[in-house]
Length: 314
Ligand SMILES: [Zn+2]
Image 1 (cartoon, rainbow, N blue to C red):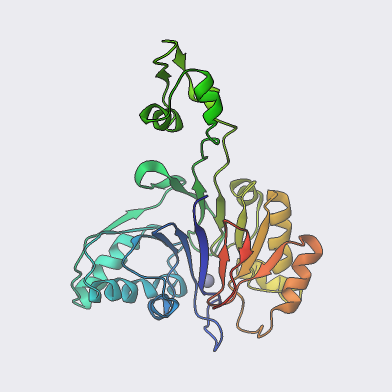
Image 2: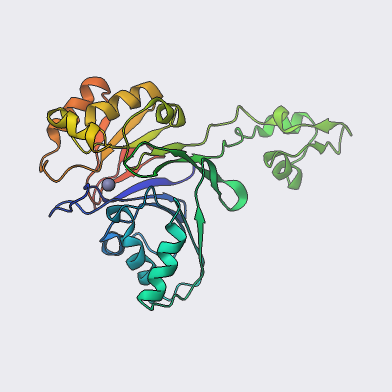
């Protein structure tokens, strides 16, 4: 099983609080980082989390509001201070490339590595090295052009059955690796072709993680996140401010839960809480009435997607 974790570095909405920084969520896939939004302070949060910024990194910005993108500059600078050489990929809505280039010029900061920026459209945004996973985008519903993202790990081939291979006359060695890689081989013994399906169990579905960014809930997003393992969703408000959620193009915890139920996800994690809620227990309660498998994100929370559990703090 691949090692996949979600690190929550910033879980407040527009205003940071003592407990919560501005939006930043990181999916760590093995030794790679996928950073979703970079609110102010993301740099400090990333350094103090000990996540290690020298890894292969791609950054996905949901929309061009300050609390989701201003931290990008500091984060890029921190990486340069560590003398990074590997490129960083930055994806986001229209304006993302200019945002980085203009600020780099204005603030006159050089980087030790290349930054490749790309404007996002609906569909596949990013294919990882060796196609182990990809990231897709879908338009969300906010007060400005905004995207939700879906991390999708490639399905894994089924377990290899050595006994079946031996029975078909394929001895242990390089031919086994080829079969495990999905290639048809010829049995040295029988001279007949042996297909991977003859020696592999059923394929195992890869993990899927949905990240909403700021949005109203809607059916498009429920479809986009369908059958995901985890959905991280905008939960700016509770029932007491359902009207504000509509006006400001955000979601309530209960609305996030309805979407999670419709999408048939396994785990909902609420985030992007309004600073008015020091204790989000009530929001979690409202969501659980609709979708029991709900958790509230907090800064420094790590969710282990492989075991589907919150990782204990050291
Ligand atoms: Zn926001």
